[in-house]
Figure (tube, rainbow, N blue to C red):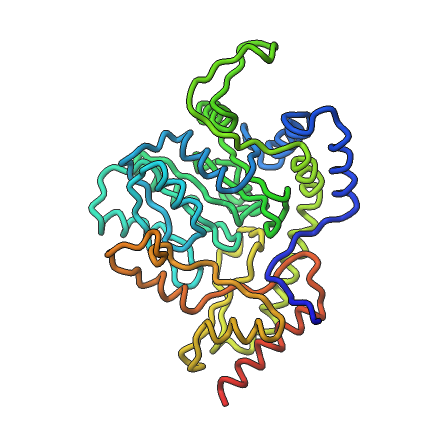
Length: 386
């Protein structure tokens, strides 16, 4: 049986196995030294005052919203194209959510579209807006910061795709997660992301008050008043969103390879662009600020299916038939049955969803497999034109 090529996959080496094995031999395999060490290394990596690990990217977002004191009825704006986590967590809190349209090529909310959403819905008071860096390409951060200041609201980054990404500011690169221009950044450490802890998440902030709340909500709302473990109080309702030392050990080892991972992902991404360059009338890669440095979490391609007289489902099925697994990334949130409303569909979001998908990228993707993917795409174009 021929194995299928996934759109993403983790990379685990002997150093990862050794580090995890070491963690299992420690007296504490949760709330131990590996968690503290991982957070310390993350603070140094991001150059941020506070970094907290938790058990998923969804938990990271929930902690960010809880720490931000988002309450029932508070206005939160986010892009219509995103994984469901941010929307779900805000909905559970009871926030009043407005979905912004996105750029039809990048799938990202832009400052202009955010302002249009505010104007169209006659929003006067905003608690927070949430950005999402589709595919790991962090765009427009400085402009979003200006909007944050203008409306005196919180700027929360759903950076689950963007671990290791940087953006340019005053001729210097700043890592997403440094929170120089945002209030809070959140990340996912799922196996398909640039680095993994199996399942896991990260929340970063330079605001010490927010940090105190994040730490509190992460572990049942508990605060300890002394070195004695039996002396503690519950200051608020909280959750068990902790990450174990086993996961943290893997994270420490993976973090050491981040430059290695990003270099390989960039090579794969650029190879796709070079080899598919002759098909610009049918396939396009989104255009980004070339001064920024992405994480290359996804390879997003936009295809002119109308010209081919096909649709995205036809293409996905064709790839799957040829042992290549692709993905949507993402269905507009308002189209899900659970969240469906009578509100009008957003034009750009519909265009993005109809034309864009992601093709395989991961560290161990072999050159022969990448060439196979490229050849299959070219054959689909040829077959569709005939």
